[in-house]
Amino acid sequence: MNNIMAVFLNGIAQLEYDRDRLLPDHQAAYLDKMDAKMDAGILLGNETIKEPDQNQRTQFAAANLAHALHAEDEAVAAAMCSYLAIRLPELKQVQIKDDEGEIAIEFIFDEPYRKQVAVDFTGLH
Image (cartoon, rainbow, N blue to C red; front, side, top):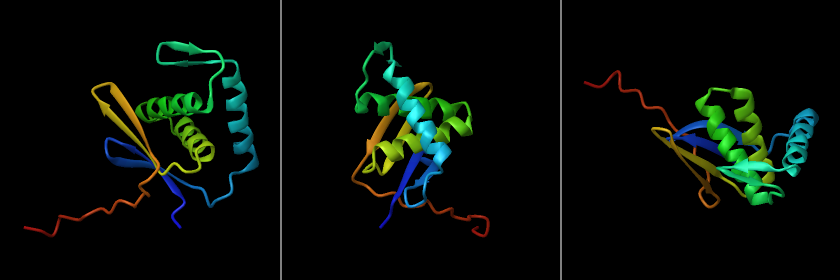
């Protein structure tokens, strides 16, 4: 069974998370610390949410993931990807579309990720 969650930016795969690989203890502890920090409230869009539910927490993580990809912050992107994969075990794909600064994020639960295949056009005339 495909147990991979993938993150796409404008249709191009950026990150993969394999749920079959055990998350190291220090990384699991980091995700728990993220949840503890979110217990104090989060800023989602322009709204401060004092007691975020799981849906709001995952939206917050996805927004931070999109920002981290844009900023090329691999560590934060990996942490946000891990958070989403662990907290939403049925999630298959995160589709992020960035249209000149307008960000749209979609969670895909019903379409398994298939690895993209590079096609070599150098030998074609």
